[in-house]
Image 1 (spheres, rainbow, N blue to C red):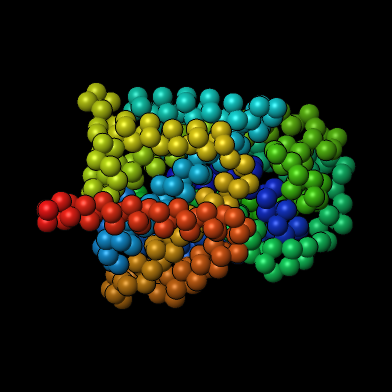
Image 2 (cartoon, helix red, strand yellow):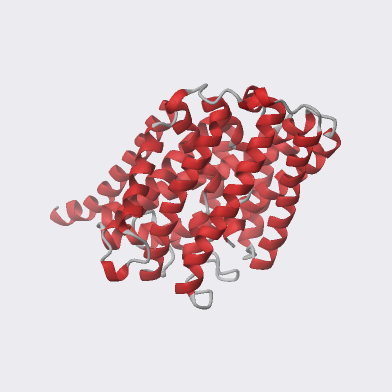
Length: 401
């Protein structure tokens, strides 16, 4: 389940913007992103053991830091993951219908939402199948890059193209590729011996994912260099298409489509359920907490999320929305780490220093994302907090009148 949450559409798309920011230095950025992801995952695991309820850091923040912190994290998650969904949809379009990626992406969102409205979700068995197919596609990328005849060591030489800031920016963008790892930490009620299994699953899944991403990124860079990856709408397809093994490119495109569709299927369900939890508490409009009488899903919340995603796919550029998504998700995990910092020694499973390092890492990576992503992210978070304060103040104002 951990691998299924991490190895998906992200790796097929995030490498391009990361190459534009740091050149071959994106490999260092990938390592930095992996360290921050590990810190965040350990904080999530500790909190999930204490609060095994739907809502993630929306719940943790409220319990440990106060209502405003919890709302801010939940709002950041909903808007950030909605942006993540649009990235997955655009990735689906870029690999399946390169000439009309927005049309293909919107169609994918509509189909996935229709499936979710029927109450059909991914199971562990389906996840194994999806991960296996995606790993095969990524293995073909590595094989084509190594055997296609275009590999050149000079493509890996430009490690400082973007300087330290470029490397940190690439780390923030590549952090998006690890999105979903906290899913491991939320399985406490569904597995045997969670106190033993979860602490072992987190580093194992993160380690395997990091190794896969490193192999794919390094061989793609070696094959075509950072410039071509930065310019390509479907960077891994460009890496395979450049060499003699370009006959594998259609298979890679199919793998990307499967990964994107799987990510959409899981995320539409996850984001809508966080929106449902927030509306149940009165932090979002109450209409979103309706449950369908037959299929038992939060159908209004799912339709609302799908509508936002379709608007983002229609109106935004993939690279801009990728940066915005990364900012919001980093903000969410900063609150996670701050919440975990407050745990007592008896409540901890990992050293407290990991929570501190995770918080600092999230703050630095968020700050070094493209300026437009940071500004828009701050404005969206601030607008959510303003909306929350107004909603809480209105009943009191009405009562005084």
